[in-house]
Image (cartoon, rainbow, N blue to C red; front, side, top):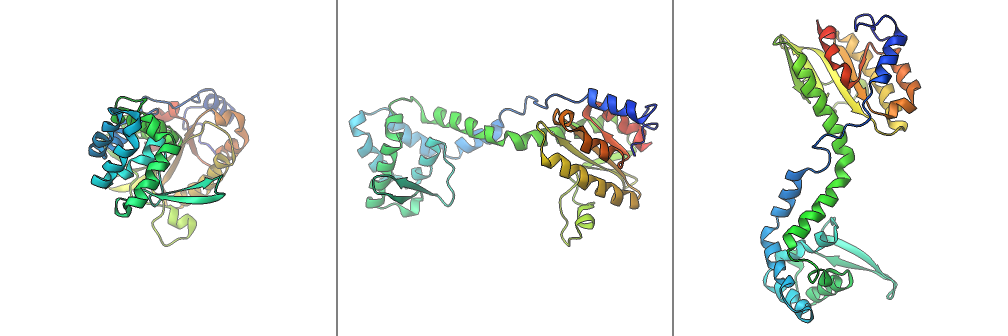
Length: 294
């Protein structure tokens, strides 16, 4: 059961009310939208190839196929960039396309080592049919275009980034409230309870934060943010009940920091966890970590 008295609440009901009333509606920080380092590095990786392809934006439309063919002959490395121009990350540097006229799949390989006159003709046709050839007449700079493509592709990583951002938010805030007696270690591989819980030989997943005092682990903190309801928050709450029990046997405080609008739509599984786990906080309640560790 939540130690509501220790945390400064008169009863369990008042703790619940405060918890749900102070949930964050979003965890979108400035870092949420685009990982600019990742995007820029992805483009800079092909800076030479992009400079070569940029020549296609400067010539007559009727000469572009021949010019691309010649470029691929002289500089086969540019073939790796072609899928990126249609926002496609290729596995094994291959794309399988179903040709409805031939009624079969055609494999296109984007490996410099596979460059041969007949394979180049095939790649040039790929570029013509997917609109890449025409693209060079619509854009002024391939580098800037690919930068935009990478920004768009990076939005697919926002779901994972959301969890990482909340974890970082909690790590930074907890650090502010700890005195010099306590040392927080983020994702520390030196102390992990997961192998004990899962009865596995491997080290398993690291904890988001391990707090040490006199070089001894005295608390572990797990951080989760949920924008939408579903089965995952429920399964996490159940697994953390088990982790709390194992941590308690090791005389270590277990703190679950969880937040997000999803909990307003699925209070019951979280309330069940609150009846088992001693310390469940949301982001705004993290200042209470001082009361847990004293």
